[in-house]
Amino acid sequence: MPSIVSFGRYLPAAVLRNDELAARLQVDAAWISGVSGIEERRIALPGETVADMAFEAGRDCLSRACLSHTSAKPGLILVASGSSERRFPGPAAEVAHRLGFAGTPAIDLALASAGSLFGIVLGAQLAPQYGPVLLIASEKMSAPAVTEPLDKNIAILFGDGAGACLIQPGGPGLEIADSVLHSDGAWANDLQLGLTGPIHMNGPTVIMQAARKIPAAISELLKRNAVAPDAIAQFVMHQANQNLIDRVARALQVPAARFYSNIQKYGNTSSASLLIAASEWHEQPALKAGDRICLAAFGAGFHWGAALLTAAF
Amino acid sequence: MSRQEKIIEIVKRVSKSDVAPDPEESLFDSGYLDSFALTDMVGELEREFDIAIPDSDLTPRRFDSLERIESYVARLCDQPA
Picture (cartoon, rainbow over the protein chains, first blue to last red):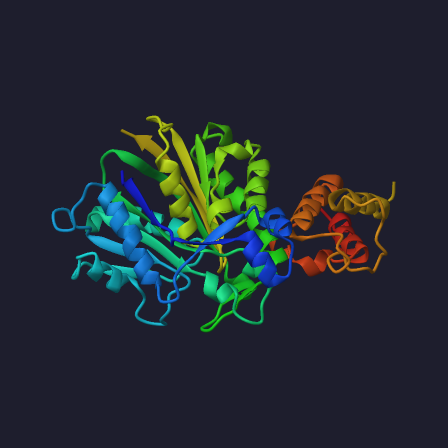
């Protein structure tokens, strides 16, 4: 069964705290943390690109997997991003080249928030055919989030960063046991980024839909695997908003502490957030063989879903 | 308690307000509801009136005033099973 053998991440060094952002937006810093759970976010340098951050996360992931760029090359590279600078080409081929894998097929996934989840599911399907799949999600959402006309409800949310994971066709790791994916383009205009920004988000609609669809997808997945929500050792969700994460936990009747959260440090890094969170969570020593982990995401499209992983050592 | 009174109680509860809004008053513009309170309200409406609100109906406009909520809930409650 395909399994995730390592994670990686990259966060820019520059930190933008709520008090700095609040002054610019003329809002209260406490309001920002209250409506989002975010305390600070990382901001890429002006010239730093989605590909730059993807490269760093990919290199970190491969390093953690104890792979060298030449001795164990991925058979396929997937790069998810909803904020790449160019209409074409996307960052995938450039990232593959910079990692030393020129000639290896590299595919762009033009998916924002749910990009990591969709990439994991695709990677699990493709790894048996192509060999190890390096999945990277990289986002530079902070710039379009503060493009005029400024919307304070959007400007407070987004940060920059990249996450990655390596999916092997088999062997020990986090086995990708099952997944559910859904898309519904009826909501395409409710969360979108045009060619020049700003990000447009119909917040109430997005929250209402996410608060329903995420628990429903998780329930659909767990029910068909005869797994109770309480039997999941760890949930790792797209880090969109702490209040949303808490509501998903409540809907599943699972303690909120069972949902890994790092949104207070990084804000919403769109598609990168799930892999950044998983990367941090995976460093914790608490994981035991047989533990079940549930990943979930929701985002622009709308695209949403969940994946069930099992720790196998 | 009438349907209207039950809806008012739900709105007051999720908005943590002691004062009932006017029937036509925008619950968003007046600050009664934000995105998350709206989500909570929808769940409470489903439980209170034993209705299932489809995802396709989950738009803020449909729940933006007491009048709109009552009209929508009435349509779901009164439609033939």
